[in-house]
Length: 558
Image 1: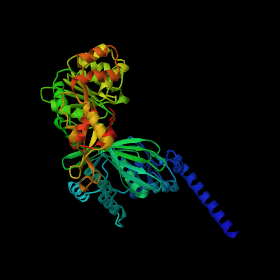
Image 2 (image 1 turned 90 degrees about the horizontal axis):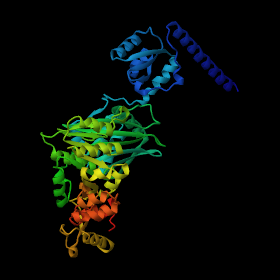
Image 3 (image 1 turned 90 degrees about the vertical axis):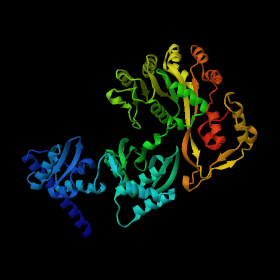
Image 4 (image 1 turned 135 degrees about the vertical axis):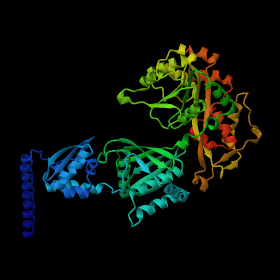
């Protein structure tokens, strides 16, 4: 009973002390004509807090607690402390507009405790991670398999000697770059965090690691990406770059809130990914001749279709690089600009500022272009401007959301485009998918049997007469095996499977009757161009990919 009374008395005395301190702070606030702030009632902005180092903040009896652009809210214990005056002066020299508030020592202590949530880095450069070539080479030389990456990561995070968080990020990035990954996924789960890499379009589980390590990684990634540290319940998008030797790799960061914490996806935009030339896209010889002729025309439109991640951008960029020369002007309108092309003017849409595809395309036409790339035709307005551009002496390249080449024309009509002007404007419609290439080190030759053999034979029987058909009696195929070279996946790299339809006289007559996809497909068969299934089967027979992989990407029903 006595102990209870003592405890109660201590609590009462504590409350009285806090009240007295608050009253004194309010009196001082009135004296110095400054507003009073109760730091226990507001959210502390960690982006603001880190602007004053913890050691200096404690010595100066102050804390920055909110920031909006260059406007900074700062709580102080007294305006008469010299180090406080000096620190405020330093902030003003950095062009911060400082608004002062009086606070209690207890409130300041609460703010200072939040410094523990900010990892201590040697140097933070917003937007750029400078990775030394030596470190990248060191890490990549050690990472032969996913297990190697896991072991290095665990050694970094488990050592008693604390590693810099930046080094852990470097290990992750080096592993992803070494694996030719397009995306890094960090996904909090119940008690752990999953680390996955998307390689050649397929996600692979690498390993799980502790949530404590993840919190440090999350803060680091937020900081370099220009994202708010204190926002955890809203989606955020940012970006940073990795500099390795003369190579700049852009990383686009997406954060969304989840049940167990914020999920991170980092898209790796490695310039090496678009180094593929038009000649090496994997286009079948007859279609290659057709496309080579069409992209050399001074006007008209080329449309390519396919789902997200099907390689449309890579194909269009390869075409641009093929036709680019000093005597023509090429301008692109993209959302967003994924890779930078030398000698080509690239612009990016900005919906908030009114720079839409339609408005941007109008502006581009005033820049005297010869060739225009429009990232995507999404609406009637953009479609009309693009088609008129094709009719008035420009070569227009763009993408459209359809499943196949035959679906392009019905889609344009559905958008509201006049069928009478489609044929004069549209030169060729393409569709594509990406299939993984078999690892050349470990792929195994097999003899197809049963349904697999039947599928291959049916597709070969449907080939156009002008395309040489492999001997059906001696058909072989290839399967994935797995080795160190391909991380035991069995595949390494990707290649496109294509189909295309030319706007010939037969198709032009059909358009006026608002044809179906099947009608267009049937009419186009006389053009002698392989469809995606036929193109894919050739790549299965010659050992480029497997039948299993082709089935994953496209339907093989004949």
